[in-house]
Image (tube, rainbow, N blue to C red; front, side, top):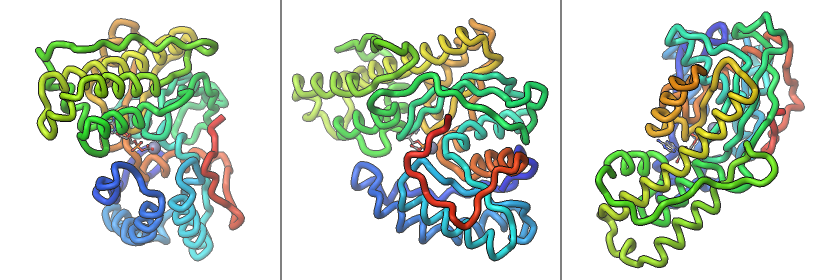
Length: 339
Ligand code: KG4
Ligand code: ZN
């Protein structure tokens, strides 16, 4: 629950990692079933933590897409029911816009302001996309401002988080791969590099990303060196070095393209959000580039980087203030785009 679009009153997340872990990735049917089981207790807990009743809320925000249709439908059906029963407005939210607002929530907590226009990198298990974010009215930059999004780059194949998850899986290291590889790369100092991955060269839009080639390069390297498999479940210096080089390549591409966009467009700030924004090396590298370029970089906390409902409530506030509402005909849109 969020007040005035920027202050978090409660943020409750029902993680499904334990459920999907043994399958090595998200199983859509299990995801919908868990959403169904969790939605009522999670809403109750969010109200309890905020010390509020359902009748106290001004509006109900719900994710319309993009995402898995079964999970989206659970939220939409419940959101519609609440809105109808309480006589409150229902606000449709784009999941990606939620990730942008996670950055604003955190900045507000820290007493900072992320000035617009900005370049925003959303980097998660399902998305790797760059937006230019501008206020519809340059003089209004508060929580209720209407924001305009222009997509300026995106992955042509895998999302960065997906590459993390696939590489961790092929090394037999578990799911989700991002946090595991992040920790392993951090302790890889001194492990001699066995392979180096060069920057991905893109034809056409230089702000686009590609991670499947890198993932395949890791796969071939491991296939050519069967000793990697023999090392499991322990990680030798060789595996640590491979993980480090993989992460170096991902982080370099994400940071270089984002900072290039920010410089080309002369924006005020850079926003980085989504599950992979929790990555330690990505954060540290952006911080360094922020110092050298003079462009301020903003991240959500790690908890707000990965999927959460507070960011959806924050995005809903801006839409609510701008009269963007839904009615009972609202439907899930699994491939909803933002701009
Ligand atoms: O935003 P998110 O919670 O869900 C999606 O909308 O996809 O992102 C989950 C993704 C997973 O692929 C996970 O491996 C990755 O974010 N991730 C990380 C880290 N923490 C989560 N990737 C790299 N480093 C991390 N520390
Ligand atoms: Zn997400």
